[in-house]
Amino acid sequence: MFRIILSTGILLCCLLCWSTMNADAKVRGYWAFNTKNDIGKDSGPFRNDGELKGQGTAEWTAKGKVGGGLELSNGWLEVPHDDSLNLKDQVTLMCWVKFSAPGDFAPGGGREQSLIWKYGPFETNKRFWTSYALRVWRPKSDFGSFGFDANMTKGRSAAVDKEFPEQGDVEKDWYHIAATADGTEIRVYTNGKETGKGAQRGEFQASDLPLTIGHDLRPILAHHAYVNGIMDEVVVADKALTAAEVKEAMALGEKGKSIEGFNPVFAVEPADKLATQWGTIKAGR
Image 1: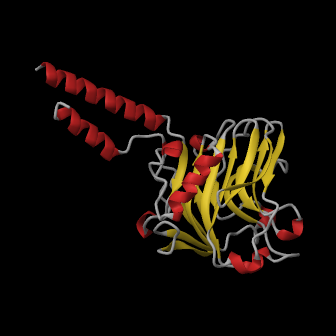
Image 2 (image 1 turned 45 degrees about the horizontal axis):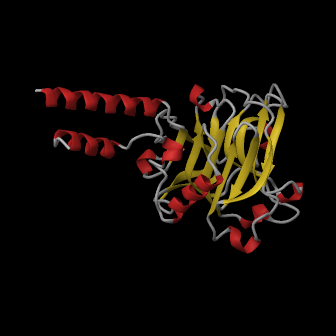
């Protein structure tokens, strides 16, 4: 009897710990695009599911980096606002992307492209276009290529990769793009390597507007800022990953593995591990 009571108590503790870890999970959104039926599904604990939008293509493809992916051409995934998507002073944004239009990176031309964008009230406040964003600047801006952008409480914060992809590489290669903000500095990573950093100016400004994947909702960019290509393994987390953790997340994708269950992002016990622990408890070990 004592063993049964003890086992039950331990199980309840495990369940309580799992519930607490789930509530404290670092991930705020994780869109894996695993199958056609869950194309807009958020596999994270907050269930920030999105809806396909646009006049062009926004559809599931079997040719993602890890299983399926989101194929885009003048389309995007729009995630309705939820308070879980408003962050305080830390963030990690990550995704895999394969571009299908090399001309978007043409020297002297090209387009801006928005990978992950938490939209701000730009129509009424031209100084607030995003709470946080992972984006691509157009080549003619001379600003850089992949980068992080945010309108923070003490000013704009940006970190940019100064190099643009080689024209011959854009269409055939997958890119792992990530950005972090740790409360003091912001960093951008291209294919696991830190390629830019800058000072962080305060906390993120809150917005009650949508988060978009593959586009930017600003009216002045209505015909621009689309991603033409395939996106996969899109992540928004409320903690800044270290350089080693970003590299590890990229390595999982290179092996064809998702980051679901990757502790620096999810910080939860997988269900099968909990079941294993319960089996061990019942066996009296």
